[in-house]
Every structure is written in C-alpha cells, then in structure tokens.
Length: 438
Ligand code: NAD
Image (tube, rainbow, N blue to C red; front, side, top):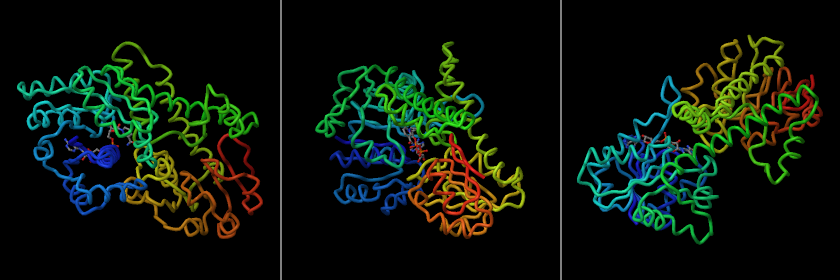
C-alpha cells in the first residue's frame, strides 16, 4: 500500500514509521519545514523510546520519506491519514478543527481518484462527515471515501502500543474503504488483535468515551486518595484491593497529582462540549474536569504545608515536569500549575527532568534547569517528585537528605515508602493518599 501521513507529531510520526515497518510505502508530510528538515537528516524531533532506530531502519529500506510537498506525497496513494492537532478551542472547550479541515481541503485538490481519506486525529462526532463535505465542496470531481481511525497509543510506549494494540477501531461506510483499511492493518492480523469496524459516528465516539472513562478512573482514585488521607487509610493498598477485582482492573488506579497531557484534558472538555451541544449533558465528565483542577491545586497546599506555609526564600528541587515519564511532552502537565505557584510564591525552583527542558524552558519561566537530581536537591528546603521517571525511582535518599538544607519530600507519585524516607534521614514527607510524617 502507498500511504501519506499528514502531521509528523507524536501520533503522525509514530504511525507513519510503524506503517512503513509493516512494509507499506509511507510519505510523512508536515507544514513545519524545520521539522521535515530534521527528519530528513535522520533526527527525531520528539522523544519517544525506540522511534529513532525504527525510523532509521525504514528510511534505509527506502519505504519511508519526509516532505513538505503534499502534492508529491499524494501521488499514487491508496490512503492519506490526517494526524494533525485538535487542541481545545479558546473559550468554549470545543476541539479546534481548523487544522483537520485545512488538511482535508488541501487533500481534496491534490489527491488521486480512489483515495481513502482517513482521520486519525481525535475529532468530535460528525467530523468525518464534515471532512467528506469539505472535500466534495473543494473538488466535486474527486472519487474518494472517508474513514475514521482514532489512535489509542500512549506517549512513552507508542511503538509497542501501535504494533500490539488492544484493538484497532475503524469507522467506514463503504466496502472500498473497509478493504483499504483492512489491507493497511493486515500485517497486524498475525498477532490476532480485534479490529472493531463501525460506522463513522461510533468510531469517533469510541475515542472520546474511552479517554473520558480513563480520566474518570484516575480522578476517582485521586479523590479516594484525598479521603484516605483524612481517614488514615493508604491509597496504594486500597488501589490494590480494588484493582484485583476483575471488573475493575488495576490500571489507571495510581493516585497522583491530577491527570494532564496532550489528550485527557482536551478530550474530556471536548466530550463535555459535545454533550452540551446535543442537550445530552456528560455530567460525570464535566465534574471530573473540575475535580481534576481541584486536585492539581490541592498539591500546592501540600507543598505549602511542608514549607511552613510560605514558599518565599525557599529552595525547591522539582524532579520531573513532563506529564508522564518517557516523553518530552509538557502539554497540560500538572507541573504547569504547580511550578508557577512555587515561583510566584517566591521560591527558588531547581528543575531536573531527563527530557523536559526543551519544552519546559519556554513554559516554566523563572526556574533553573539542573541535569543531575542530587545537584538539584543540594541545599534545598524541599524535594518534590512530580514525574516518576526511572531516574528518580531509586535515588540514594541518604545522600540527598544529607545535602539538603531541610530534608523534606513531597512524593506526588508515591514512589518511595515513607519508612525508607524516614530511615534515610528526611524530617518530613507527604505522599498521596497515605500518612506522611514531620
Ligand atoms: P502534534 O501537535 O504533536 O502534531 C501535529 C502536527 O501536525 C504538527 O507537526 C503540525 O505542524 C502538523 N500539521 C498541522 N497542520 C498541518 C497541515 N495542514 N499539513 C501538514 N502538517 C500539519 O499532535 P499529536 O499529539 O500528534 O496529536 C495529533 C492528533 O492525535 C490529535 O487529534 C490528538 O488528540 C490525537 N492523539 C494524540 C495522542 C498523543 O498521545 N499525543 C494519542 C492519541 C490520539
């Protein structure tokens, strides 16, 4: 199959590289000439484990190329995937479809007859039909089909998720589109995964419903954690006891500082907005959006408690600012709420993150970036673990406590056992949903 992939971000690049690894001929297109220039030189513009090697292999095999020229990319393609951003529209929470519709219009004018136009971006119900209308209006003579193929990969584990998905969802309304999509994903059939073929609306709905459900699950355990702190229970034990129930399952039951990232915040808002538009309110989702904001703000209170109610003049070491480990993505990360509160309160903030600096420098003004966690913690009054990178999971706590000015720890991912922290010489500790000390 010959495929064009529009958008070389976290989803488009991973999908394009993986499709080429299946054996398809893939051209990745982006409007960002700088990104394409880097890709052409073999440089991966995002941090995603394993992506550089997979990309190199497929470029060398001649199956994977990059361009800014959409017309060239679309020559002879069987399918074109739209994998551009759908951020929250300013003001109303709706998904901003400007990029998707612009891409659709460009495709209309340049694509060959028989093409299947596939929307991989996360888009509200009805968007694939709008894409079809837009293409028809821009080029009434083009013979094409549309397909919805929402993506479920997780940053940090994207290649594995793409290659071994729990399922692939394909929304189609023609035999031809179903056949092309099935040919594209055929290499995965060897692994016996379910392909869920639906109508366009259901495919679009599956993505939002799945993401909102996961956000609800995380937020539920975060709220349970707050109650655990009050009643003297330990949320880690509670999660384990809950998660072993097969109906509940253990995943997404880890209490933390609130969900963030490129998907959950914007997708929950978009789903709530769709509910309002169709007068079918998504009240649980709406509440979760509010509760998650409260949870992030509650973290600031925890840190304040450890700083004698005043950040002013305190030196704070923050370990991890990306929204989760193994990515450089900072979009809607809890750090973007917590770190500015520290800086605004007059703290001297020293940040250490294995991949966050490139994006973080722009988003977190007023902090200093320190490559080594021990150096960051030196002479600090507070150590905050905000993202559970492997690099921060097994630090020598004794060394840290000795070099800190006041050895206090806010472990917002429950990485460490309070007893070990105490034994290592820390005088104060708070986690999430468990008893601290100090
Ligand atoms: P991104 O912002 O990282 O990348 C989007 C890319 O599209 C950018 O490089 C941009 O320059 C390019 N672009 C925009 N308009 C273009 C055009 N007309 N022609 C060519 N290139 C264009 O976005 P992302 O994180 O990859 O997300 C893409 C979509 O996938 C979103 O709808 C998102 O919700 C969804 N999604 C994301 C994830 C994730 O983990 N990031 C997971 C599942 C689904």
